[in-house]
Length: 142
Image (cartoon, rainbow, N blue to C red; front, side, top):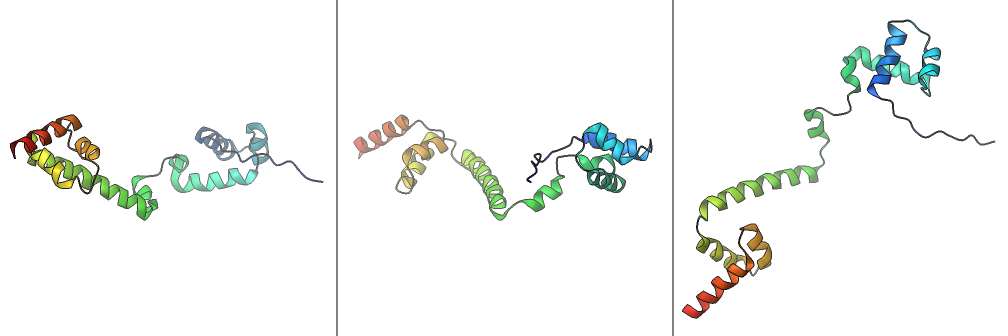
């Protein structure tokens, strides 16, 4: 005979604290509390009480502290974070260096063999048509 298993349940912080309060402060039997609150296993309540005694109500907060989140980051996530910072710094540096349009156009010309012109224009906040017009002007001057 197979038993239908109920899906895994998550309990809110409020429900956990209510169960703990009833057992510890009001001295209600755990069996009564789980029946009244719809908790599947009494072991859950015992585990919650243990956590509560160790960390207080914050033991049931869903968000992790920043220090824990940092530890959990994978090497790829850390690399992505570093690259985001680097890109942001380089964008600011380029913005300072390239105050004029001419410098931006020259940078696009220097990199267009490596990267698509459209991407370079977007990165330097230049319209592709403006760059093409610049290129046309330069070719007629030569």
